[in-house]
Image 1 (cartoon, rainbow, N blue to C red):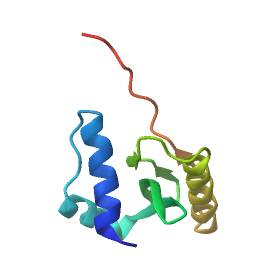
Image 2: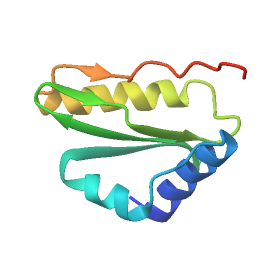
Image 3: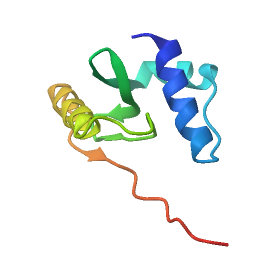
Image 4: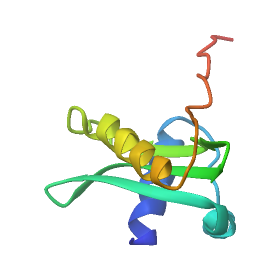
Length: 104
């Protein structure tokens, strides 16, 4: 996987949302207990996901996408991730809930 492309997609997404993003070092520290996925369509990255996991579950910790991803590409990425994690004996996939968009 090209870490520069992965990091750029994640960073661009977080900046668009006015959120902080993990550093390359932080992502690197997750490698030993996480899976990293990228959705591509015609060599264009559509989105990415960072999924720490153990035998009990996987957790959608970070994710990114381009402004207008190809329809279904991110859903497929999550489905593919679920299948790959299931092969490893992971029992649950947690999308980590939703962030409310509360106006100040």
